Amino acid sequence: MRNQWLVTIVAFIVLTAGSVLAWNEEGGEKDEAMHLTPDLENGLEVYEVCSACHLPEGWGTKDGTFPQVAGQHVRVAIKQLADIRDLNRDNPTMYPFALPESIGGPQALADVSAYIEQMLMNPDNGKGEWAEGTPEFTKGQELYAVNCVQCHGEDGSGNEEEFYPLILGQHYLYMLRQFEWIRDGKRRNANPDMVKQIAEFSDQDMQMVINYVSRIPVPKEKLAPSADWLNPDFD
Image (cartoon, rainbow, N blue to C red; front, top):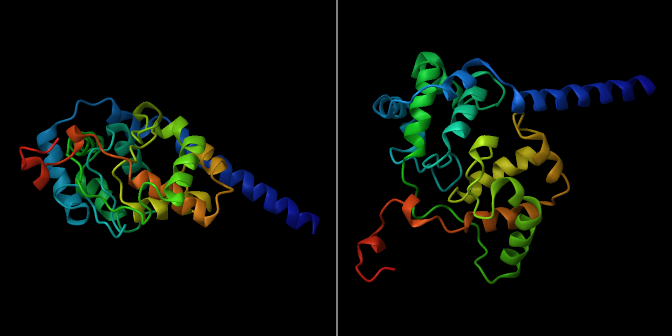
């Protein structure tokens, strides 16, 4: 029994250390890509590989299968692509499309990430079921204020320098799945601080806070035009 307990403790330490290293690791192509001058024309060409799943507009799908990537911070996109290529993030669907043989080396990472950042976002992202004014929305807002604002900001815009992603405008079902994986230790490149912060979240807590995030208004300047925008009375 004592040996089994020691093995469990050692395994936990190794997994935790691996997560910290995956989050804080410097150098390699990730670091190289972040110091390159991006070429948006090449970024468009590289993105053609991505568009099959993330759609030409970068909007992903409301069912949560593929996230919206439009508008995401350059450094965040580079990190996630590099993590997938380095097998620090498990994504078997995306892995073959992210490889250097498919899209190119560090320059390609810089180019496509810069292209993604300047794409306008979906004016109708997938949202949770609880509208503003419901108890669940209010509880989600409270949970967000206590647990998420410090890293993701009051408006969900994140912090590029710290690799905190922009989450406003993201699809509810995609965020729900990622939140659950992070909480349950299934996403290996998750920020260890976030893992600790949300460890005690119930499934309902998770649903309510993600519902709130999915309903944070996206600034007009980040949104693609919609039919309403063509209405001269639209304010």
